[in-house]
Length: 309
Image (tube, rainbow, N blue to C red; front, side, top):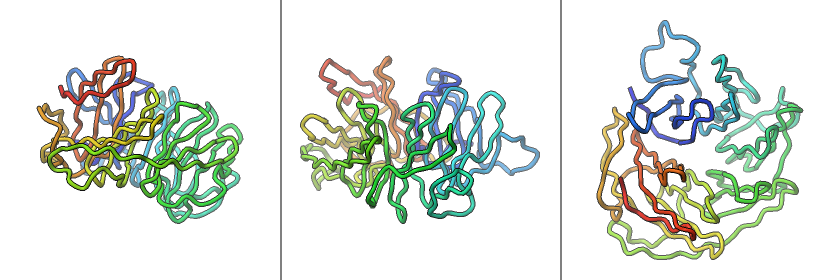
């Protein structure tokens, strides 16, 4: 059995392989052999006579990592996975019931977690969408949660590292925001659309539901679920370019790599996650039960090529 929506792709800090995540399971994939290994969660089999690795997650929305520790964010809680012992426990929140409380971990409650980012070894920033609409700081050493943002930020869909390590990048209602984790200052930056004359993309580049992103050399690479496109933002000029991808209709039962020859037509139903491996000039993009690898050519100005393996 294979993953469903690929919501996150990361370098696995424990195995050195690639970690991929769907709403119900965490996997390793070997880029050479393309073999999938289920690490934690359910792969769709009948839940009988299975060990503790096969915990039933209540829909994972993101994961973050430290050496030997993986943190699985669900809608209402965060689970802690010890990669050495495979022990899984609830770190904070109630996995079955939401709420709106901050303070000690024992009574902290979330309503809709969407994303998380480690700022330091003991500081984990997490973003909540409606109805709480906020960014919180979780102090792991103190077992304490506090609010970073002073005012609501409606419509948060994802959050990730800024090149300035004290800053966070997030998208809310299609707007790019920078958040200072020290004082909670929020700066919304308008984006300048750069039209791409491509087949299957006729409305002009406007941001939709941004599902994932990362910062690399003063650029943001993102996946736009609404427009079914990869996007690139130049953080100096704030110009956004949306690039469509020919990702043919997937076999929903088998995750696989696909080789395609064009990137000018949007035909894939979802683009959900993206990760870069600069030492290999490789971009991995996750959608519904599919992972695609793109070869990049990154020059000193970080020009992204759209040639595909």
